[in-house]
Image (cartoon, rainbow, N blue to C red; front, side, top):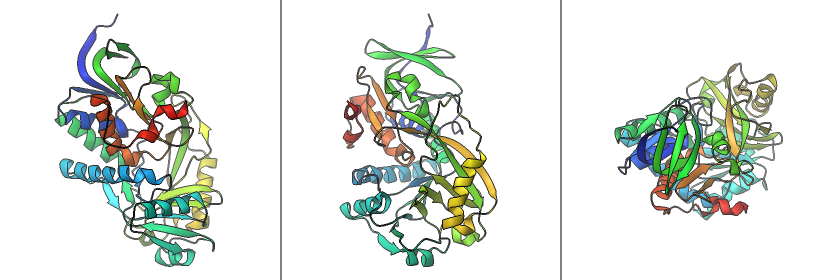
Length: 379
């Protein structure tokens, strides 16, 4: 029998994008916090790396996300002020598709429901204003000026640094083996020690089903690949000239970024090849087929962004059946709170979901409307 190494108010399982934010929000409320990560954040093993992550208000997924996004923006700016780190870059966001497509119609609906400033641009207007593009005649776009990107690695470092400054313990390169209820609290066993706490928050990303096996069908890891291609006309892809974008093309839904960190266009295909994987055994090497689908998109729609390949990176989505998040207490153990299934569009919410999970851990309630993310919807 392991002897507990310590008792905490809250243990946070996973200290990436979401877990680092949870640890910060708990620690600033004077909780005794232990955050545990099996790697050393920020790292490239999960879902929170790659230099940039899109943030946008024109949310095509559903207008109900917009209030959470407004709070997320406020918290990201607060993090910048508190940490002295710049993590949020505003470029505008451009969501492109044919009229009637989910991307275009959904983005426009969010703008109209929430009275967001926006412009509707024709294909000719997009090509003229943003000369990196070569779009077919039928395409239109919603340009929303508040969109941009976050630097995920800096976000994680800032949250963890501030959490530590408020007294949180951060254990890295330590793997959680299992956990169990212990009275009204929990006992967590790792490859180093055992710990007890009043509450447990699980933000383990693609490893969520391994810590909560009952969620195996509801939080499914998927392999994702990103590419950076050298730009032939760098001025056309600079942050001041090239908004972050989502493009509903014939070949799939692509997304991309201006130059940042590397002198090239970053591009990805949402849900890539839909490869379900085990995060402990997935192929983390980008293959020729991975590169080809991204290069073909760039060559067709952003031809000056299809130069030599600068980098290819794999990462992980964790998908729910409906593409929406899981933010809830464990159905059997109310002292355990779960954040996961962020389905490839969650990082921008780390600041506000971190606050929300901290609320749920401490009081069981939150002022944020996260009802659509409850597990009961899958019953």
